Image 1 (cartoon, rainbow, N blue to C red):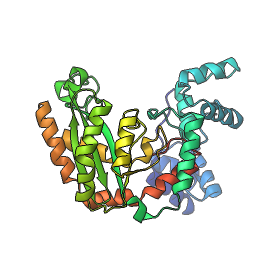
Image 2: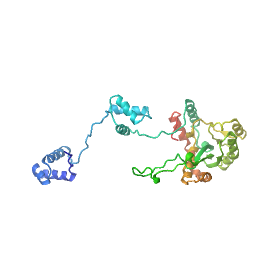
Image 3: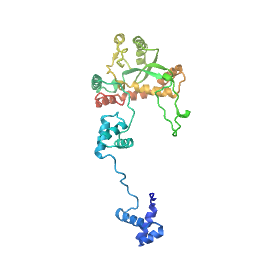
Image 4: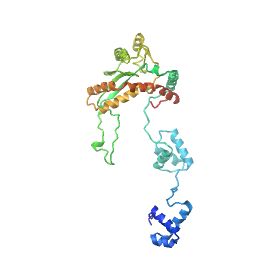
Amino acid sequence: MGKSKELSVDLKKRIIDLNKSGKSLGAISKQLQVPRATVQTIIRKYKVHGTVVSLPRSGRKRKLSHAAERRLVRMVKSQPRITKKQVCKDLEADGTQVSVSTVKRVLHRHGLRGCRARKKPLLQKRHLKTRLKFAADHMDKDKTFWRKVLWSDETKIELFGHNTQQYVWRRKGEAFNPRNTMPTVKHGGGSIMLWGCFAASGTGSLQKVNGIMKKEDYLQILQENLKPSARRLGLGRSWVFQQDNDPKHTSKVVKEWLNQAGIKVLEWPSQSPDLNPIENMWTVLKKRVHARKPSHLAELHQFCQEEWSNIRPEACQELVDGYQKRLVAVKMAKGHVTKY
């Protein structure tokens, strides 16, 4: 026998009103065409709870006890890369058989959700130590100091940006409809390598690197762009140059030129792109350029130059003025990677 349909709240209220008016259970049942047992149950529940609204039900007993749930959560926290199927197997080995859906629901209740692991540089103990030292040495520096830093780095921009993601609204079975796919080209359709610099007062030079950059190419870029950018950005005489520890950057010929040119270099911890705000600038640049959909490499380079110069100085200053937050984040993470 199938489950009968639950009575509406209005009908339940009529049953209560008729009962209050003095009518018997049989009379109410006959008048409203409702089984006498049902009428009796509704009146009894009303006298106990004072309402005719259906109360929350306990539902089916949970497969996992509270202790088992805590153990499951501890297992996932200690092994973040473990899969739901593996969790099920581990629980089954201990005598508890649950489905993948149950595991997912339990983890969701405890605020744990499956996410893609962020790709970050590999940090060894020596890297953690130098990152913490950098944060400690510069924690007391105010905005004035960071506004005198000329930040630099290289980046690769692909023509079609095969690493970008695009979400679409579609029905099941429409995944391969041309309107719901994103065309790709091998190697992103080609790419260009760029060197750029910026300061709190705005963006500096943006130079295209031809082929694989060697130390001689890097030196030429610095000779042609470093001081002109510093002058154009109004950094004065006491500015500091930032670069990472790429072998080309720390080569003897580059060090000698920087020393002869009287350019002070910021001592930099290795494997620390999260400490370089120009990484945020690259993200902004790539989004703007790809939004314009360049069709060939020459146009890609042109759009990069235009969008780089269109970045507002106010955005640069806001990015640099919040630099101390990065140092605090490194300290809080004990030298490990941060959200930046």
